[in-house]
Amino acid sequence: MSLDTGTVIGAIVGIMAIMVGIFLGGGDLASLVNIPSIIVVFGGTAGAIAMSFPLGRVLQLQKVAMKSVFSKPLDPAETISDLVRYAEVARREGILSLENLIPEMKDEFIVRGVKMAVDGTDPELIKTIMDTELEALMERHEAGKKMIDTIGRYAPAFGMIGTLLGLIFMLNAMDDPSKIGPGMAVALITTLYGALIANCFANPLGDKLAARDAEEVLIKTIIIAGVMAIQSGDNPRIVESKLMTFLPPSRRAEIEASKEAA
Image (cartoon, rainbow, N blue to C red; front, side, top):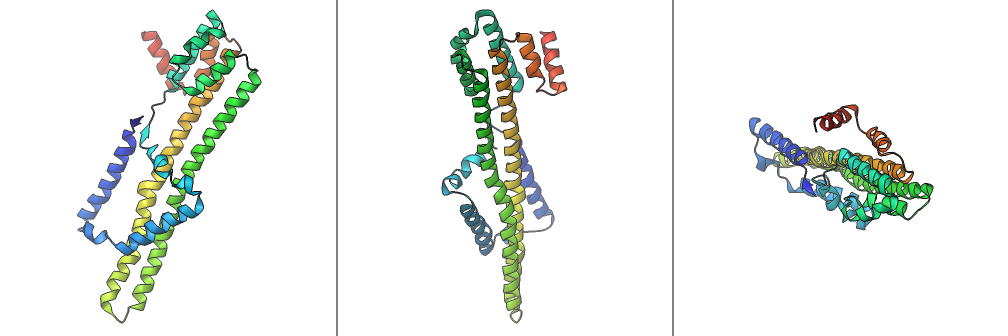
């Protein structure tokens, strides 16, 4: 696992943009701290999340969020290269020889597919099992992303609730000018908190998790196609041609250029 610099840089740029805007506008950070607003937005959002999902999943929220900050680099070209190499070994020495390569295989998904192929499992069953595992992976990712998306949906809503509360307090205190200011502060700052949570945290992290899911699904789809091609005894060149179709033309051109240069 490595730190995702894009997520970190994006968070820093977003926070700095807000800070610079505050200072250039002549504002004071201390004036943006309002305890009642914090309780309404953060407490209300936390309560809504606890009501929306099983407690066990809620307790995993931190791990889900960290997946957008820390990630394992995924390179489809490297996966294709490995699968082509396994196809060459299987073609030259027989598919049973792949069992000797299992210790060096980096992806457990490849290991499971190759083990089934080596054991002589029916091709249809291999594909069914691997497709089912991929679908389960996508469902787990979607469940984690849904919690983040729910935060992005509820935080602004509780910000509006705080705004309504602040307006009510302000209207009830029209005869006392000293209470109008605090009431207006609650009204405005709760909306700010809700918008910050949604746009500086929940929505960007949700989008990053979706991108992570797409990357991993692509890798797993390539692996399924590669294992099935190896199991059927395809020529390594054919295997490579099949798998390269998953990459965009520009990436294919880069790989071909690097081969020619080598």
